[in-house]
Image: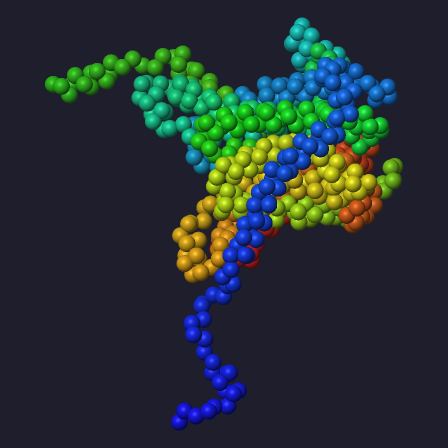
Length: 333
Length: 294
């Protein structure tokens, strides 16, 4: 039987020595190496982006730095025509509007967090946090739009005259109530940072161990005493972290503030006076800046803003980490 | 006997004083008040948005370009398309970059170097958007010598990366190690395991992260001011100034014309609807398994 067979048939019946694997892959290490390389490049890219930001801001601001030095941050004249630049009014405006926002937002945010974690019925908890976090999803420019047409008129017609009548002796509320003011900027910023501060405060309150509450209640405390002694005291560091994260957001917030603060580079004691912030001077003047020094001065303001927000954010992350054990703070959604 | 004395001891606990009880009620009241005060602006903003926006949207608004100052009518069609265009560019750059960085962090970055990248991503998340705009201006606009859609896209892409990479990492880490080991056991190489097993299992979570980043940058105005710049006309070229919905809303809102104010409200409503539908559509598609989610 076995005889010489036709060549063509041999080819057809040829069977490989090893059975075919179920899945076909080239088994070289090369594709793996390429893959790891590509992914590492993406990871490095994140570092690269930060480096690029720092490099470009430094390079862009060099001219202004050489011209003004440290005086740039202490001088308060902003005169593009005569090329005299001092950033103090903007630094002042950024600080005051952000502090104002914190003063308004912190008690409210902590109150909301305490209510949602300790007081409200379970069924209400989900929807309530959902609605508060919905505030965070509204774009900044829409806050600004609303502020121009609703908040500013309310401020100038009701709130400002009221403040002037009751607290006028402090001289913090002098001047005509136009609405567009440092105060309006503080209020709109407060509305914008409440979701961040309250959601972090809520997270921090939730990781306070249940035993703490039970122990304080067992000693005969009322609910409020339990919250004050057993919960808030334990959550202090985390809440402060949330507040600082809110501050970081307020410092860099641009559009809504630009639309209501009045945009005048002056330092005024009155909260009714218009002001200017670091972010809003960039928004208003950057694309129209003529002359290298002018542009460079603006970029230097950007550099200062960048460093301040980075320091503030790093501090906040650290504080929140100590409480939630390494979970990233979830404020910037 | 002992029972009786125990209950007597219980009864002898002094009642909670009036002052403490009043404080308790007052503080409960204060907490409820804060909730009302916080929710009031939310309700006010949405009511205004729907009320003013819905009464201003019409067919012309959605299909025409802006009319010159003083003329009635016109719309934001070019800005709507421009926004979609810029967001498309941003997603094309930011999504692969962000997902790649996330894969690196989850699969190769369990070391000190990975921690450095993780920290950097968290820091980048807090950089003010206007500063990112300056950087995009420096690296794209100065180079192209034009305000351009590409510059706007690059700025938004930089803002998307931290969110996408951190959520991608978290989602990949949720995939059980046994699944990876099973794939290795079948002789599947590592790259293929990561892409077709790990990433695929985590698809719906990863896409949720992408949509989170998308929703965040879709309403951004500040980084577009001196990158995309805005445009009164149609533009679909990457090297030319392009209109964007948030920019147009800003310009119209601070203008002195009632007609433009009306259109700003309409634009704001359209922007919110665009963001919500984009997010909802993708989440629906993911749930349906169109993207091969497990």
